[in-house]
Image (tube, rainbow, N blue to C red):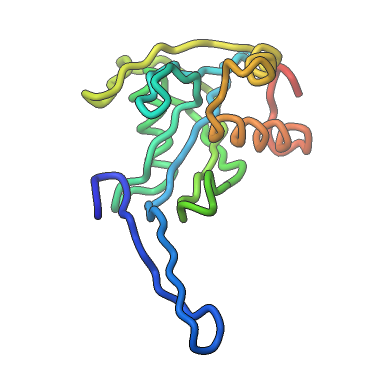
Length: 175
C-alpha cells in the first residue's frame, strides 16, 4: 500500500536456517527538520493541529523528502512554507530515526541562521500554522511541562543543544 508520503512494506527474511520471518514497516525517502534561530537567539516553532492525536502540536518546521529533492532543499522549502522565513545559512547538525521499529525514515536536522522574512508562509492546502518565538529556556520548560510532545522536535532540539555545547553550532541563548 502506498500514498504520496510513504509506502507500507513487508519484507521476508530468514531468521535461522530454514525458518522464515516477515517484517512490516513504513518506508520513506526521509525527512528534514529545521531548528530556526533568530539573531537574538530565540527559536521559531510552528503550532499545528495533528489529526491522530486530535490536538495541536508545537514543532520545528519539518517535512518529508520528495523524490528528486535533497534534505537541504526540503529543509529550505519547509522553513519557508511553514514560517514565512528563509535562512541564509543551513548547517546539518545531526540525523536520527524517529521510530526505528516501524520506519526506515532518517530525519536530517538543520540549524537555520540568518533568518529573513520571505513572502510569507505558503503551507499546503491541508496545513495551517501559527508561528511562535521561544527562548531556549521557554522551549525546555514547555518540554518539561508536556506542552511540547512531538518526539521529532525533542530529538532535534537535543541534537542542536548537544552540538552547541560541543561548539559545532552557536545558539545565542541557552548554550
